[in-house]
Image (cartoon, rainbow, N blue to C red; front, top):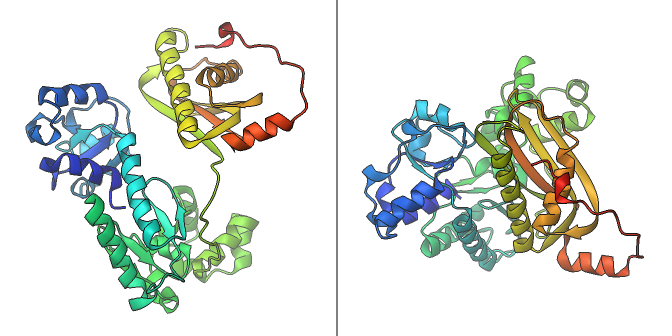
Length: 394
């Protein structure tokens, strides 16, 4: 989907179309107050009434931005204060994940009605195998891609970009070639002319660190990467990564489109507007900690999962990260149980520095029905000692 969160917001705020808009940070309460001042009519809020990014103070990050904002160098996961220096005139909206999930379900249902072999890759992206879809090969797949684009736009008002290729690796790259609302088709014979001139960073899975290491060896493009022997790549990047880089540079990817998969974990985390102290800001940390546990529990219930490995993530003011987890006796999706176990994890971390970020994670997941079946057949075990509320640090 094209700038998915931002595009959903522009449907609700048509007066902001064509303007630089940033989605992220906090500000939900002030935004709700702004809507209330105009009777809840989003379209009636004048452009001048929206907060400007240049006035933002805090350490939030951008979730996404409209294409006019991206022209100033603003992008996802960028710190809001940095983005404010690049595009202070951008308008600021808070995130509304419930609305984004609703539109996500709508566009995926449309795709499934046309091409039922679909792999869900998150809220705004899917892989589709239309090898056996009637008419799927017409015009090299372009006809079906157009049908999908038109069907989604007619139903939701949103646009998407489609990459058509022999495998998932190349299709992912191709989907970025002609954004927004574009279709790109890459055939097997196009590897050297279309893919090899691209920077290695265009490979899904090559991040900043890998890119820096490649550049240190004089490897800038995928074509240059392909010219390095497999053994050389294994020697310098390790057996697994080196082999993967070699295969990737030659456009090889035999991964199937997976129509069903189970999540490994669910988590929630937040970056604070200011560094918080474990003692002096205990009340605020406690409120945030509880809220994270409640939100993870809600995610589990909504998606029908339970988990038994509870963990925490902390980022300190020196940017060092600490994680701890523990496995409890039974599966749960209960916020209080999650908070108790996460609180025990917190006790195992020395909190002698201020905190920038706090996160809560539930792993070792099972669907609710499978967990109930497993626990009903398991032999009874002695009850573990309870964890009182005084064991929770915050």
